[in-house]
Image 1 (tube, one colour):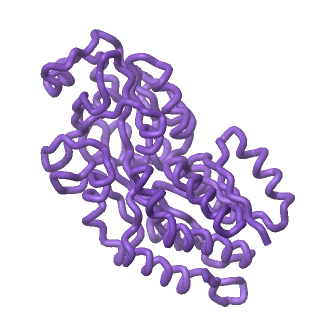
Image 2 (cartoon, one colour):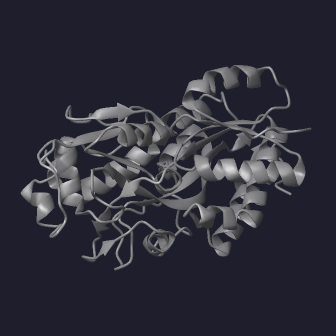
Image 3 (tube, helix red, strand yellow):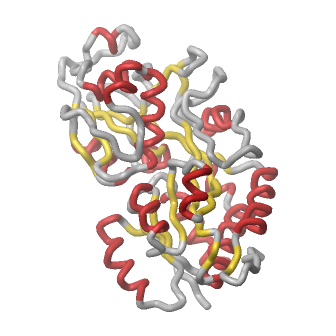
Length: 347
């Protein structure tokens, strides 16, 4: 049995889903665009190493959660972890794959990557429409010596249900009381009317690249691959930090995965921590109606855990610690069964 893993855009997802439905031996997954760059890299290497392939549709976390609950895909993917009670109610389990960072990206003439500094409170005020120009005193006070234009800021946000948006809005809710009261957090929120929307991390990246004086937020791999201008952020320890693998790793250091896989890693302590850090997760039904597909999914992620750390690091994701990978294997063995109650093998 062969399995094909191709990364597709949201626009192509419906077509691919239709084709997959006619392929009896096809394994399909859908969801977060945050991990799409690393899933694509892993997929290519996995296919070369094993000949096996799998379909993954980068359609956003909200769609991924919906589709796995409706059993229209074999696995879902989300950057917003589901709470344990919600997982139980839906008959699902989740496990993390990698850790990464959500990065504010800008398109401002004359400003170099990493030159602009922002705080979380000012970032939220930009999206709230309270800070409307790049030379606003709230921004210039943080950026002595940086020439900023007297130009209106265009904030860009996600149009689709998005785990990246959950991580971003969760962070803004922690650092700006007005944001928490008026907007809150979630995969989809009622965004203020002062900005534009883009679908997927890809859509935000494209909008920011084409619109002068814009700001958006994307997973760091998109910023890196597209050579976008990122900002420094002030973290909870008072340090201005850049989005790099070490900063994501520092933010994740305090997570206690032994208690629950529900871990939100925004605004974590530590002078080196990137404040908008998050893990990304795979969602599976505990009872696998199609055990062959379940086994194929586990084999892929087992291979990725064993062989994919370098590719993850090259894209500035943080690979999971070996102890956590071992714990996840035990979770698979304990949680995933076929309809007869037999454990789904990952090896």
